[in-house]
Length: 126
Image (cartoon, rainbow, N blue to C red; front, side):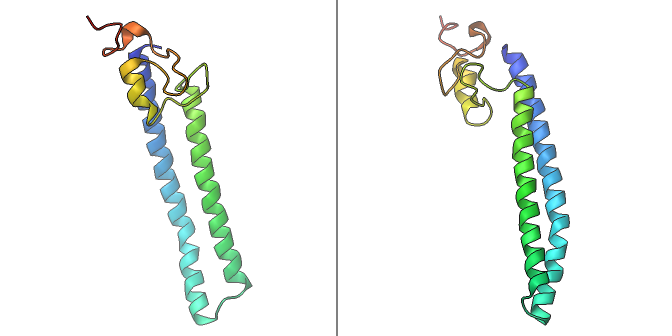
């Protein structure tokens, strides 16, 4: 993969992650409103089956949303080719630093970016 392709795919992944984060915030904030009514109900009546069911439903829904966001981002990085072809490790996040400098996967050391495409690689020095 060339450096330009990697940077283009990385920007697309960052846009997708930002969109997923914003969607998650919107959904979790709308799920939060029933929680306010449960709090008022618990203050007025006390803990009952309805309040427990709403709180458990809110926790389950929030967990599902977070899982969906994580799986969606993982799938998007696979679609964009932001993973090592040898060990299937992600090339997004912390591994980016080593990849940009050496062009190699930070997990297995396989050459991911073309050697002449890495501006700071040892092959281009000198």
